Image (tube, rainbow, N blue to C red; front, top):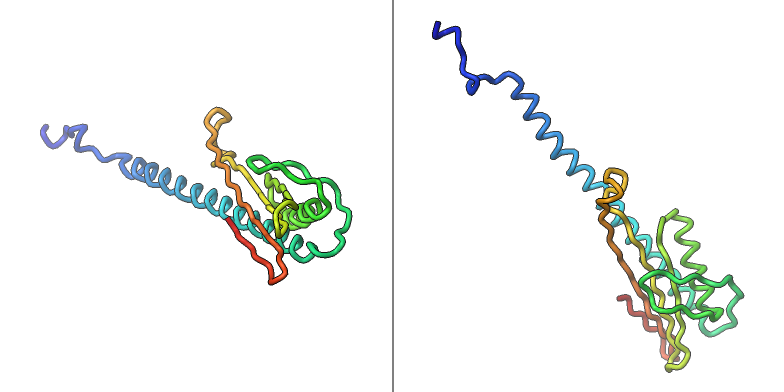
Length: 164
């Protein structure tokens, strides 16, 4: 009779299924986290590319007559924008880069300070993303904000650019 009865503690029926469920959960979390991190990194790099392109436009066109571009919109977490032609066209150049890369939720604001010598242009871009937005419920969203600013000053001895 002792050979017939087995202890519940010694039974291993279904142990492989439980182990597989635990391992698959951790693996799924790692894959999802890697995808979200890669998407945030790509968005950050695209934002920096747009800021650099806007700075390039502002430096190249700072001495001459700038074209007339549409008015820009205020980006969140950025200083107040300027409605000058060079600022509007630099923001337009950044928006062109962002639309070419189909980057979502990135705002660009450009301000021009003509009171300083030499005149400076500050380009600020910001974005926010929801971590695992497709997986989480609306009540448990985690968001992050990131901003980059580029200040460019044109002077007679060359151009100086500072990326913060």
